[in-house]
Image (tube, rainbow, N blue to C red; front, side, top):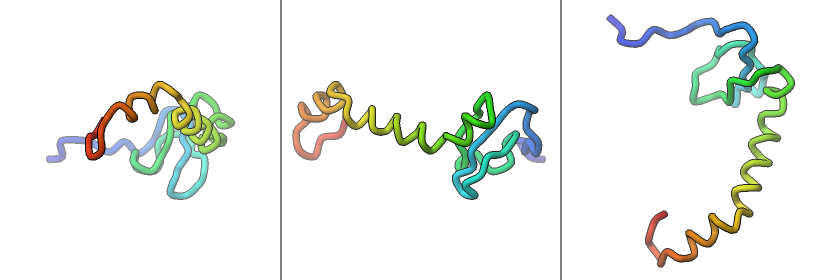
Amino acid sequence: MALFKRRTAGKPGEWFYCLKHGTVEEGPQCRAADRFGPYATREEAAHAMQTAQERNLEWETDPRWHEKNEEKGPGESA
């Protein structure tokens, strides 16, 4: 007996961006490791990669993040 049941169909109105296929899906059709979401609209899901890129840039240029890492010596982790 399986501990977890695989959900084959998502809820109407949940949108995901599949990283493996590069497509927008309604409901989780691909495995969680291969998707971003859920998003409220199809348009938000379609722009998932752009949103991720913008957030990554904000994080990489955040001075608070760099100050923390500069305080650590070589070989020390955050």
